[in-house]
Image (cartoon, rainbow, N blue to C red; front, side, top):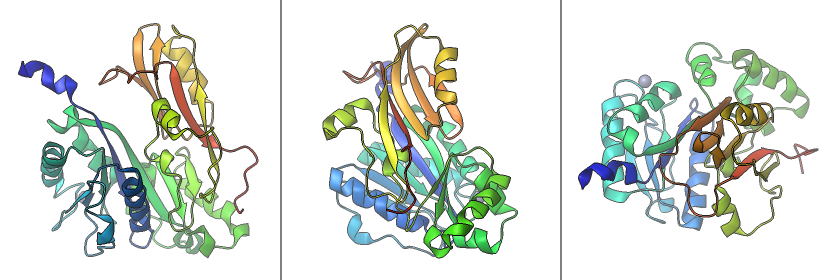
Length: 304
Ligand SMILES: [Zn+2]
């Protein structure tokens, strides 16, 4: 019967990518698309980057990707109904594996994310995250750091300090401190040309790590180095104990299904939050009790 359909719907993770013009967020989108094309992941990209269409069209149409541009306003305010409609259409027509929403330079990520909670998007949107790309050079020069910039940075689940190569290395600590004055808690990573470890944006589950067949190890292509590890909590842990374990662990992301004292829960670390929720869908086979953790590698250097 139709009544059971909603709960059977596949949950689709959604990423909101914001940042001023010149922050390099389009480069990051291109990396996401290229990675998805390589791995056969279907991405639906919704772009609201007014007048700055930097997407390489050759990347679209591969791997079942689809692209929609929303024009004539901003997705966090004037176009929020259009955004909702577009999400619903894309879900129905192409059933993507991921949504990526590239906002205009002035959009507020949190206001954009609010649309995921609206009916009927709330029935099919899975994990969501706001990434804000910051131009290190802009910070170093102290340009436009108030108003919208502040609002964007404060609603980030992850800050990507991009274009650090444009700033002398000895100034990195001071520009990071400047960003920390605006937002004290969100995880922050450095990048050159948007070379962020994409697992930070769409974290793999334990099954995906098994399929990749690689030992948890630092990956070489990021400017900063990250490692993926697995935590296997004993069944029956309380939610408080899980939260305490993960909250202080300096994690950039975490995701897994855990048999808690109150039943199976989806456990995630996103930004500064530890989220423990009833799973919207059953745990895929073989991954119950396995939490994937992503953190900085010990002793990693910024340059290699
Ligand atoms: Zn807006």
